[in-house]
Length: 409
Image 1 (cartoon, helix red, strand yellow):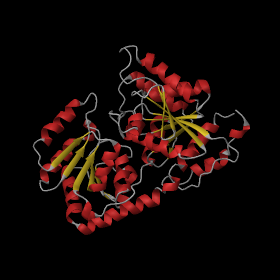
Image 2 (spheres, helix red, strand yellow):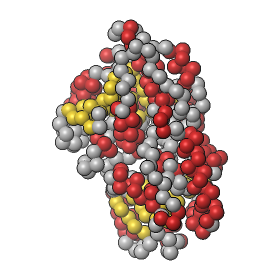
Image 3 (tube, helix red, strand yellow):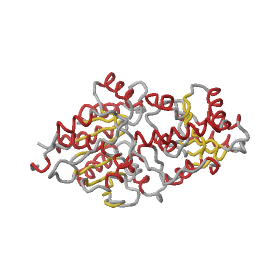
Image 4 (cartoon, one colour):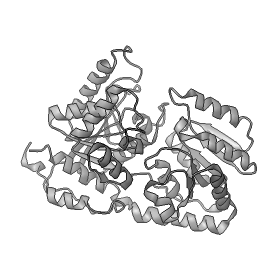
C-alpha cells in the first residue's frame, strides 16, 4: 500500500492512554490519509440494522449496528459489514453500510457445514469487503476464522470483549473444543483488543496474557427525556430469555409488587426454550406483568422512554447496552452486576446480591420521589460527562487506525 495511508502512530498510542471514560479525545484522521476501510463482522447484525427482519438479536448485534451507522456518517471511513444472508442477497446497502452476506443461518449439512458453506462463505464475504481492518466481538470460533483471513491477507484485526466470560475460561460461554481453540488463536493474532471495563482488562491479561484498551460503548441517544409523570412502566426488564439472565428473579419481584406495573421483554433463545416456557407459564398468572416477547430494537427503546426503574438480574455481564439505554433516558438501574463499580460510585441506582435487597432497592426508588429524581439526574449527568455525542466513535477510530497501521507496511 502507498504512503497515503501512513499513520502517525506515536500520537495514536498517546491518545489511547487517555482515561477510558473520556471519549472526547479529539480524533482527526492523519493528513492526506485515504478513508479507512472498516469491516465489522457480526453474523446476526443485519437484523439489528433492518427492523423488518425477524431474527434474534442481542447486545453485540446492537453494538455492531450502532457503531457501523455512526462510522458511516463520516467522510474519513468506508464502512462494510459481514452478516448472514436473511434474504438480502450477496450484497446490500443499508444506511451507507455495504453489507456482504456469507451464508444463510440454516444453510448446509450438519457435520460438514462448519467448513462448507460457513467457513468458505465467510472467507468469500471478508474478501469482498476488502477492508484495511476487521472488527469482531464475542468469544468463539468466528474470531479465529477472521484471524486466519487477516493473517493470510495482511489486514488488521481488532477484537472487542463482549462479556466477562470472554476473559475467563471458567465462565466462557463457549462449549466446544473447536471454538475454544479458534478463539485462543484469534486472541493471539489480534492487532488490538478492546474491553468494556478495567476488570475485563485485568482478567484478560491474567488469563490469556493479552493487554487491552478500555473503550466506551456506543448507543443511540434519545431525542427527548420523558418527565417522571409521563412514565407508566414502574419496572422494566430487557434481555434474551437465557438461564444466565435469570428472569425468574424478575417474576419473583412482580409477585412482591402486585400494584406495580412490571414489563418484561425477551424472546426464546435456541437451546433454551425451557426458559421461555417458564416465563410464559408464570406471566399468565401475574396481572401486573406484561410480557412483550421479542421486540425490535426501536420498540424496546420506546419502553425505556416510559420506564421508571430498570432491573438487571443476570449473573454474568460485560457492560450491558441496556444500562446506557436506561441512563441516557434518566432511568435508574437496580442490578446484580456493576461494571467497574460505576452504578454505586456514580449513584446510578443500586447494586444488589439477593432478592430481598432487589425488592428493597426497587421499592425505595418507586416510593421515594426525591431518591428517584436525584438518581435520574445523576444518570443523565453521567451520560453527558462520559459519552460526548459528537466524539463517541473517536476511541474506536484511534484503535482502528493503530491496528490497520500494524499491517500497512
